[in-house]
Image 1 (tube, rainbow, N blue to C red):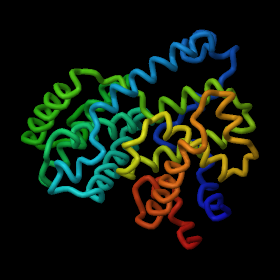
Image 2: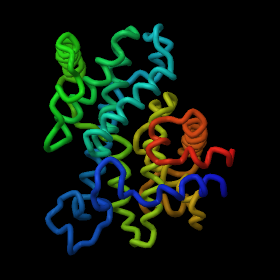
Image 3: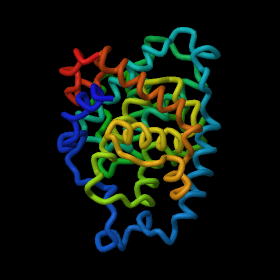
Image 4: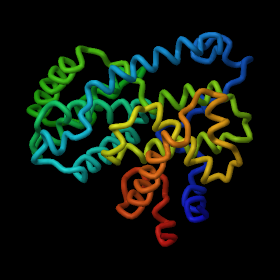
Length: 287
């Protein structure tokens, strides 16, 4: 795993990722007494709410949509759309939550509607448009990334279709939300914050793999924690750790962990936008 550590190390400083902000996962009772998501008294209710929402979200996804519906698209085109979404998130300083919400909306639309290559730009921009309005306090206006009047009309039409598919249920228990939840209950000391940094990085990379979406977001979040622990040489018995904090066990997430590692290597080799942003392509020769 030494080559992975060398590749990730330049990104352990997250000061320039999406938007400059403090680590929202660090939990100190004195600083979060007014945040209901950080109060352990509600942790069971939050868990069951996330599970329920996760099941709802999964019901809108078809992991085999490239075989069943999208005859004109392929996984590489989807990866290119994610690259463009990442550029939008970076340019408009969107939250990480917005990035993951956009990917979910994209997969929902591709799961239910056959599209053509000429529609690609309008579709990923629509997904970002909806996600930013839902997640951001000050969402970027549409005219900042769309200057064609006809494309704007297409975006408004796709927005109506997507919201109709979801029945306006935009709450998403994404892998990012689950990682937030897990990090809260684990309550790791500040000395282990690199563990969180690596896990977030792996979540961002994992979305490029279409095979990931068939797994529950809670398992993807656990797999990112498990894989990053291996990268950092954190000595823990995962199954005991999972039992203590109600995480998924090793046999449940091992396959996902392998997929994440494969996707990480492919992202570096193909110079994905996420990798360019992290400046990891300089370490490509380690492969």
